[in-house]
Structure formats: C-alpha cells, structure tokens
Length: 504
Image (cartoon, rainbow, N blue to C red):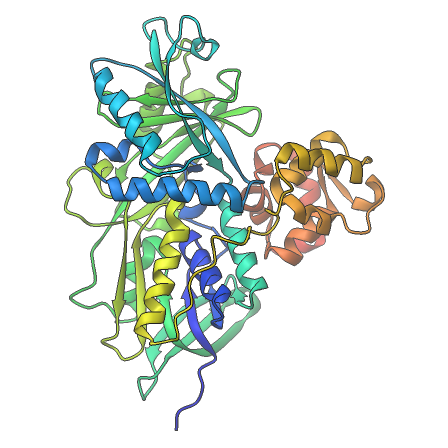
C-alpha cells in the first residue's frame, strides 16, 4: 500500500546551487528537505573570487550563451540582494603582446550589449598617464580599459537563499549527512538515511524526488550510493586558490591582469585593509574537503601582481589564503582554464524515483540553474506547472528602500546610538534584517557581552538562532569575514563563550 512521502523533494548539498534549488522549489509550493553534511556554504561556495560577473574571458572560447545568461542574472541579483552585492569598476591594463586592442574593444562592446538592458556603466578606454587609477601600475602600462561587474559576499548569498527557502516552508538540516539513499520497494520514492554525529542523530525520510547538488562530490555521492550509470557524466575537479595581502593601493577599483599564459588574475580591494588576489586553475585529484593552496599557486599569484604593480610583493606578504574545488563538466579540454563553466542537469529515473544531479555551474548563474532544475522536476514528475518566481522577491534583508546610501541614512536615524562602523557593517551584512538583530535594543549595553573588535553577543545570538551558525568558524569566516579582523584576545573571549566551548 502506497503512503505519502514526507517530502516532494530532498535537496542534498547546501552550496549555492542546492540553496537556490531549495528556495525555488519551496517558493513554487513543493515540500522541501535541504540536507547538508557540514555548514551552509562550507566548501566551494565560500571559496570563490566573490564576483557576480558575465565572465568576460569566456567570450574568447565562444561561450556566448553562458555570458549572456550571466550578464542577465547580474542585473537580477543586484536587485535581489543590494546589501551584499555592489557594482565594481574593473580596470584592465592593455598589453599589446597578449591581445591586440581591436580584440579587447570588440570583446568589451559585446560584453556591454550581450545581456540586454543594463544598469552598470559601459566600458571605455583609459589613459593611465592622466587617470589616477593607473598610479599603482608600472610606467610601461600607459593605456587600458574600464568596465563594470559586481562584487558579492558569496557565503552570505548562500545563507540568504537557505533562509528564504526556510521561510517558504523548507526544512533545513545542517551538519547532517546523507549516508544512505535507495528506492522504496515499490519504486515510488526515495528512502533517505541521515546521520548527525555531533548530536548522535539518525533518521530516515522519504521524498518523491532527490536533487544531488553535492558540488565536487556529485559523482562520488552517486557511486557511493551505487546509483551511477553509464550516462552519468565524468567530473573534472579544478582547484582555484586566492591569497590575501595588505592593501596594495588606494581606491575601490579592481584590476584584471592578463597573464602571459593568457589567463587573467583579479586584484580586488578586500575588507578595508586588504587586497584579494586570484584565482588559479589547477587540475585536482584529491579529497575536496582537504583542499589548500600550494607553493606554486602562491608564486603564480605573486608573480602575476609583480608583473604589473610598482609595489612588489613576496610570499611573506601573504596574510591569509583560501582554496576551493570547482566541479566542472568534463568536456575533454586538456587545459583546466578552458573547461566550460556552464552547467549540466542530469535526470535519472532508471532506479524508479526521479534523481537530478547538478554538474558544473558558476556562482552568477545559480538562480537560473535552480530555475531550470525545478522546471525539469515539475515536467518529469508531471506536476501542474508553476512558473519560478525566484526573480521577483528580494533575498532576506534585500528589501532596501531605493539605495544603500538612503538605507544607511534611515538606519542612522533609527539607531543613533550605534557607532558608524558597526551600523555600516550590520547594514551591509544583514540589510533590513538588522532590525531583527537589534529588536528591543536601545543602547550599546543592550547588545550584550562585548568580545572585542566590534563583535557583540546580540550578533552571535542572531546568527545561531536565525542562520544555522554553530561554531566560531561559521560566524567568523562564512556568516561574516570578521576572522580577518579579530585579535587573539577576541578569539580567547569567543572561545570562552559557552555555545562555542563544545565546538572549540
């Protein structure tokens, strides 16, 4: 006798794609379970270059559809999350020996117009002998180009999608691994076995469909559950690493530096006092959970900067590093940099119930990927079709009145007792949700215990209650980037805080 499954859909993996799919499906009225073995955005999705961009360099490999979709999504996302996404001015020095000027101008013209309506400034040429943006560059670089893209707080983008999914009815289970997945005896649904070691939990749920959004583990997960088939694509794992150094130059503009190997490296102002440099593209064959930068990558990024900048850096200037593994569809290209960043959705009903696996993708196109995945789910399950509305509703905190500048003025009037730096950080981190964090607070004392470096008990309580933060790393490196700023004394104070004692 058939019984009704617990959920219409179980999404496995809370990176950006899994989070986006869970949100889209929940917004369309499906009952959704989102399962994540570790923390939200705990792997690739918190290790990006933190850009919402069309991918200018992909024009060179004729990936026009991907670039068009990315540029269109850039416009959508700017309106969904203006508190964590902001426009960036990119400066690209011209080097005649790598790409001729006509090629650059043609590429930028296409980039300006391929996505249709845009709200960012168009590209234009620049004379570094007259424009102050050229001051950090060596004198041999005399001309270049300005163009526009966007910056994003990547891990917060994931968290906000999960938060939105939950508010639309999805059940969220973090630090809970899927340790077993098999069809029910009548092949009508999936039996999903879950385990959370930290709280000694084991449980089983049923779902009509499963979407495998496990990122670098997408194929390994299928193989572990004995669900891979001859049609399952191979995955190419490509490591991307970044280094953080003390701030290299004044100004808010980003540099795109062409390299002799025809790759590009971004140099981005980061967290006020720092500069972010990345990324590399290195074939990776190890365990994605243990990914880390190697000395060759560090040297490559240092050399990339020193090729252009008057102020030279060395390995000793590297303050922090991070690495992630991108799960790319194996398209047979021998060059890791040229492998497509496009995505592939692979449905499989050979075992009975529907499974869709997500291969590839990039941060900028996550919402479109999610929409396509749920569209496919509706069609294959013969549900009465409902259109995606994920482009219409701002992400949590993103319902900003007009502009961030206006919002900051409004919040300054609401919270005159907050320091300017703290108010600005809350506004750019939580948007309108800072009102939840500051509910019933009348003065600085109401924020509770002060740990140092702008971190108060009220913020930690908000993150643990509303954003699934469980450990110090969740708070300092994924929900925020305070880990770059807090002192040893603040760490000591935080580790002594009762909720973190067990996890430290």
